[in-house]
Length: 262
Image 1 (spheres, rainbow, N blue to C red):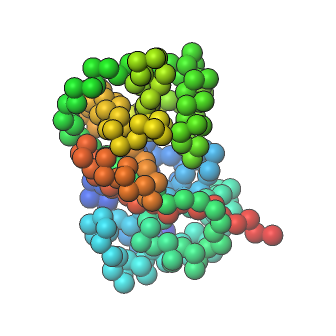
Image 2: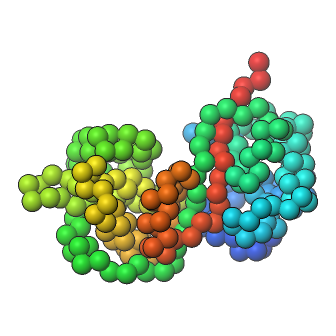
């Protein structure tokens, strides 16, 4: 394996991949290696491990070539047999969904999820209801945000009241009750990353998620020129919504915890 130390080199090898550009920080986090045209980017934080990134992949959604499958297998095998997972205290691995089967053949993998990393640089169409969007506070409104989220989308992973979400917005009904909320975290690069988009169950299908998402996206583009987000891959409604707002999928991830070696 070859060690990379410059973000510019990884970006060039990836052909300007949006995920590398806007999700991987500069300077590079931890260790980054390239093995047979597959980048292995160390993931730090609560779920330490590796992102496995084919550098010569075809268009998103196309089936990988036999050669790419072989290269990803070789890279995963090197991670395992070279002792890098154990040496760096890895607990997880994320591979492209198209390489999930190979990952399970090479590594002992447990629980996790399939999700997509998306981005846009296109301002969404203006919805007149955006004028009703109000700011919310991660600290002062934490109890209300938590109760609303738990009641209307318990699968939501967003952290509330910790400062991780640096911008919240919402919509209220005529009685002052929340009917939709949305937040923006920050990528490790500092780029806004949408999170916590939730609509009240009895208001779904009325476009409120689009309103708060559009308002946050417009703010992010005005401030940073780009906005990103992550969504569970089984959420077809969310995919349709974000596509209409101009978002595109750069990486469809299969993220799994590593089964500890006994």
